[in-house]
Length: 96
Image (cartoon, rainbow, N blue to C red):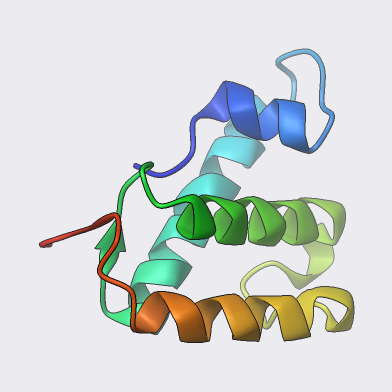
């Protein structure tokens, strides 16, 4: 697991528990997206993987109608750049 619910809620500035279920689902989807895109499983020690997932969760949370599709244009470059680095990184990756 890369992200914890509480740290993610703090990052996206959500208080309360009403959205916990959807945020947890988005966290899982972001982590699966990263693993599928890189072929690697990362843990919470890889800071780039953590930021990647936080950026993706934020984008998907704020644009829920687009969830499951490509990242929005405003984050596309950042996501692509981070993915390229994470594909070749061994730091913080674990054997699936």
